[in-house]
Picture 1 (tube, rainbow, N blue to C red):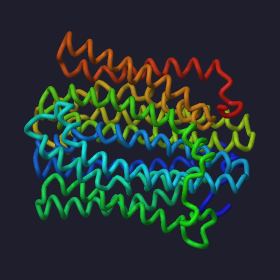
Picture 2: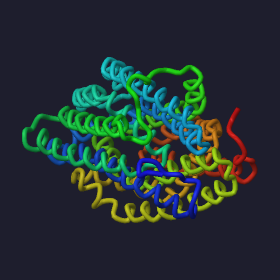
Picture 3: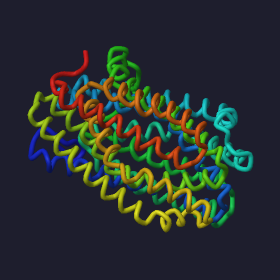
Length: 447
């Protein structure tokens, strides 16, 4: 195997997972820095109203990109399965179909996001003093939807083939570019909150270009041919069948999180800024969770494609244990220094108090979130993507909405809003534990 691909069906499984997950972890670290820079620079140079404007759009953005991100996960499972089974023709067909779907998805998101932004933000009850900035930020952000979707699509292809290093290198470059452009546009030139979104869009575009150059050059081991990009009906059905459950799960859970954001908005701009700052810190706690979940999906999928069932079980056990420990250590560390860390984004005492309260309410329970995501990643790698969809929809969406509806009517205090997360993480972890111990998840893909 070349550096461009990696066979995850051979070697010590613990070393394989750690070597594959480490670049993913670093990629997510730079992605989180990438996402945090807007808030950090905006909060310090433009004030808490501008920070609230940037923060108000996060859950709404994920509502739209989450569905297509789920399809990309499904495509990665299909690609890595054929890679593990050594079926090169089907693997290439899946890759070219996935690229075509990504281009179409990005174009749709760009048009829909730009047109619907004002209406959606008003539905969320965005505070009047920040809505104009939110609209500007959100619209400019979605003008870059094609680069955003295509970067995730192309790096998903690389990771499905066992290559987690090149996506890291490209992300480091775009992250540094994003920082430089933010400092230029916001700090030096004073262009305002919209320019932070423009910096992000330009940086994402650079990542997309680097990925395309890597995957279309003549000497690439697995090469995308522009003439072959298109929709193969059979392969598209397979990709969608594996990806729809994850896409539906992401989008519907995002609806619950939009409801959470709407409730946060009802507490005013201080709460919006404080919770927005917390979300950036939470992203760092989430790094091992998403890294090991993604690694487990690829490792499980390749090994099941190669019919290495015992190896897949060992990978699952090690990945779960390591991720739980790492996520909890990071979560407790950040919770311990919460006020100082929140103040980095904005030092207003009310903003700091709300952000620190959310940190100390949610982060001690991050091991539960980690467990749920790891089992979900294992299920997707095994082709059983309907399981995490059903578990997370029932707990993170339906129950979370019911809890918020009742709790906010009984007692309209923000700390009870924060409790929604550890409570629903506990329920999903319990259901996933029962499934993992009782089911025969290891044998075969969904029919």
